[in-house]
Image 1 (cartoon, rainbow, N blue to C red):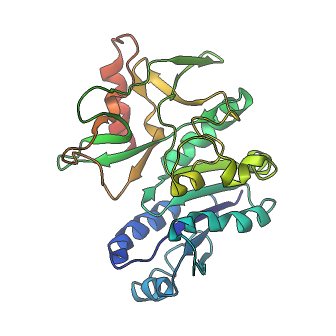
Image 2 (image 1 turned 90 degrees about the horizontal axis):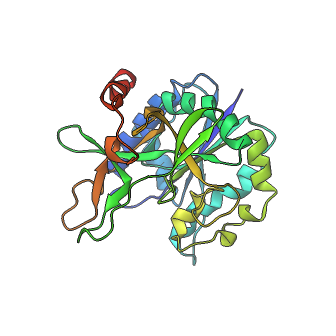
Image 3 (image 1 turned 45 degrees about the horizontal axis):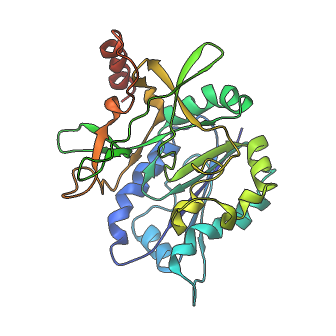
Length: 286
């Protein structure tokens, strides 16, 4: 098994703040059970200097690290995330697992284990296996930036619909399946490459330029899958393996912004007496 991971890294004056993020990403990759090659797509030669200065070039112990500089002269710089698509297409037969992520998203080993455990069952039933971006507050409480209540309280987004596959309970994310990250095995990635949706211009919905690259096949208005689902470890408890971390912490408790929901409070099905016991699984994985 071989993994390839493509990361968008936009260079700007504040980009040095992202170096700790990359260190955490490399640490996570080094814990993966399979060789992993990393390709970082950037807009500036200065990214090479940044990585060399901070001794990052040898941080990936599981495989190779290559920085690819894209000339965006005369182009909208927000199209940088689109630039990895041609190379990914060339690599479609070279790897077993394909990943795309923004440079502030942390995918731990347990996320990979979670995906490997459920992806076949989910894809066979025409669904996408979901993840949630997590942000931590000053107390260490975990919130998800993908489920929130509007500033005026008029819109509250919870997950309420159950899906059962082979006797296993899942919840449908019919609110916001975008999580700045996608992952496919070779078969599904080749299906992706050969579909109209590999052309980012064909993605439906009012998504921004960057979001379109990170949507893959699971956009809310894309009919490739029946929907995005997450397994439950109790009637109201999301599987902890679905947590990926938004290291920038841009949204948690942002003044005047949407109020993020606690990861433990995203699902609102009927009450479950075992919910408290199931939540202990979160502590075991961390």
